[in-house]
Length: 398
Ligand SMILES: Nc1ncnc2c1ncn2[C@@H]1O[C@H](COP(=O)(O)OP(=O)(O)O)[C@@H](O)[C@H]1O
Ligand SMILES: [Mg+2]
Image (tube, rainbow, N blue to C red):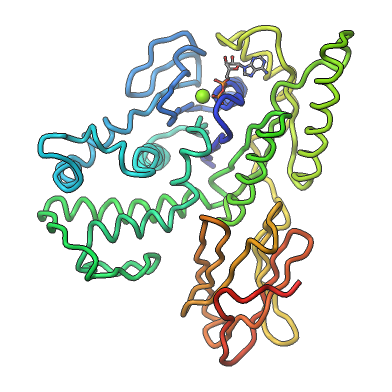
């Protein structure tokens, strides 16, 4: 079974190092492995001390490495759309280079490329070294991004794709794309929808979060995890990088050690249901395969990091006395930040800037959300037969 592993986390926490270590281990197990970076600040070339091209480069038996250039992907695979977009958003002649301006666009193209590789090539494991969390929003905010593009591309609401929000027709007075661009845009939408399905499929994709025992990083990690859960991605591993050696006999570091222990404990508390791996802080920069191999030996050897794991406490529907209950695992969320309402066949959960539409299964067609509770980090939403949908903005009962 082929599998994709996505490494995410704040900038500089060690995503590339940890992803590379997994790639080395995987290749060492005799699995044909592709390590691919979608971070525009690529550094796999530095780590493997090789000049990497736009296509996958062989670096050792069973291991290929590739740094995706989203602009190259756009131009190669979606040139008509690019021309259309360039004309729509930028001065004539600006070309595809200006596309970095469109939120999440580059990441989306990189991920589309990875989905293609997954389907068309024979790698057994694809290890993705992602852009820093903030820039990986496309992964999280998929549905919103899709509707954002939809509004731009289909001002007349030409295509009614179920996952997309209804398009406000009057608001957009943009030039319709020509036929070729239109076909390509449709193709992209279908691909995006399939990409989303692929990346949320637990049998296909694992998301792994790299973090460090530091206040700001831990907070961001918790947020990241919460949103990944909100969108139902399969997070199945946490890596705490840069743990100082415990036996440092040094006053200066004694305080840092105590702080690190505090934040590591906080991580263990917040991610108790996941496998947690601790990576030592090495006395050298992790450059070259030998340096990366240290992580493999110290942390990954003997650990089952590639297996599909059953992580409990996720999204599930359950039959109850009066109807059904939907449980959403939202670790680290606060009750007062959650907003909930039902819109025809979807349940909409909003937290801060994030919103998720959860399509309700057919059995719930004649049911409405009648109340919700937030307990044990889980939002439990009750559905009962009849009318009187849960009102937007109404408080959630604790
Ligand atoms: N455990 C570690 N010990 C020592 N240096 C590390 C460790 N993890 C990462 N580094 C170094 O920190 C820098 C950032 O790591 P990198 O893996 O590139 O992070 P990211 O991909 O998240 O930006 C690199 O110079 C790397 O060699
Ligand atoms: Mg990196």
